[in-house]
Image (cartoon, rainbow, N blue to C red; front, side, top):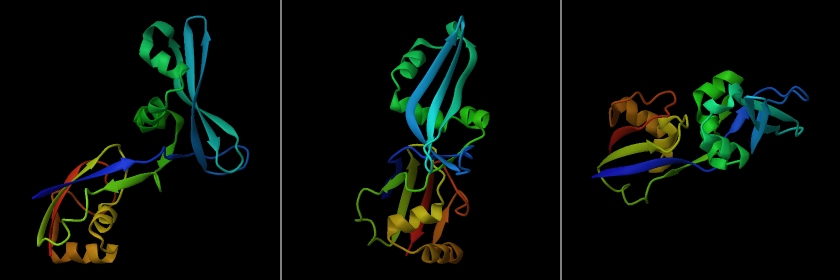
Length: 182
């Protein structure tokens, strides 16, 4: 029987970027936007606060774009400080590359396994789905979901009792499946 696990974000991730005021490297997205229009051109920024000193930094969302080329629903979301838009923009690789930022997902997600009734079976087939692009080590997910230590999961992989079509070392942020034989 196939079990479905879901990796779900619990809050916004921290933004990794150096603060110009205190040299800290972590910012918290405030969920607020600043929009500035100059004639027919518009700029928009996502505001983030330094976790150490509280200094504000602006993450560029739109830069010198013609107002008519911006979707009206996007403009409304920017003006309304839509929290869903904040999460969406932090996930956007174009926004991350433009602002030279990375995301810190530590303590910002949880694993929903749907219960522990699968742990007593000899063979477990599991499909892991990501609700957002959260980079996590599969060994950590499997250890947490099955109630094992990471060393035990590593041992199961080397013995061939834990198999997957994807490489289980490193980090993944896309859906995958695995089979565990006890």
